[in-house]
Length: 94
Image: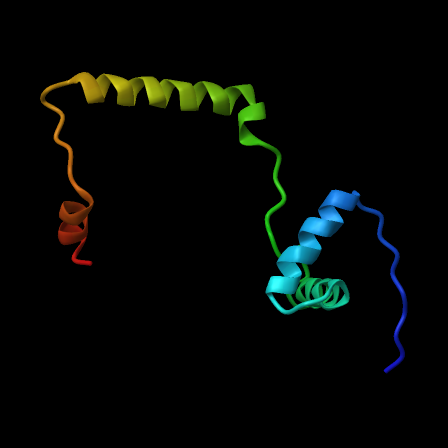
């Protein structure tokens, strides 16, 4: 099968950090890029989520802040029942 070359520009630190991780996984940059491209073809999509920081959205930020305030109130309420991880696992049967 004929091969072709793809040129990609990136920050030197990104390249170096990726190289180190890929080396630990036994991959080189070409192998990783080819795995990515094959995943794109297979899934017909980017094979991971690309999203903006949800906290940049003022509506989401307000909801999170409201929920955090509610949980702080619950934490201060002596009638709030707290469960340990073991108790939750037992309740769920896991």
